[in-house]
Image 1 (cartoon, rainbow, N blue to C red):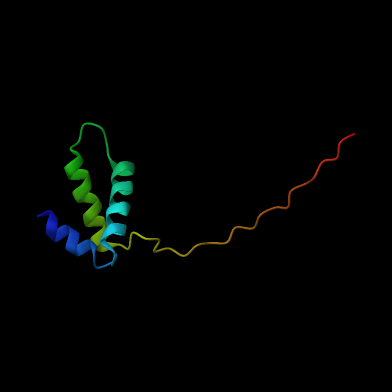
Image 2 (cartoon, rainbow, N blue to C red; image 1 turned 45 degrees about the vertical axis):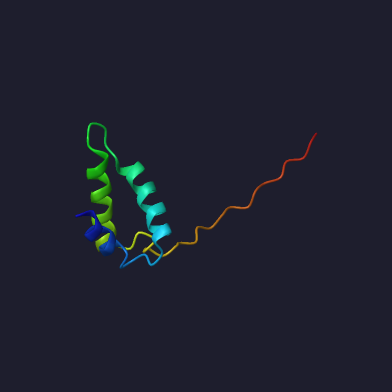
Length: 73
């Protein structure tokens, strides 16, 4: 049942509103044509049960090259 999937996903996300937002974004990105939207939503909730959906990997600092200013001639 979907309620079991939701309670399993709440183990990683404590806020239900945030869970709804993350699940809707993930469902939009993972949905394949000619499949049921309900099945995609269930797959997303199963993934959230096993993994932390809110950025489990650390953010990497990417060095940014300085911009070169051009002068008018």
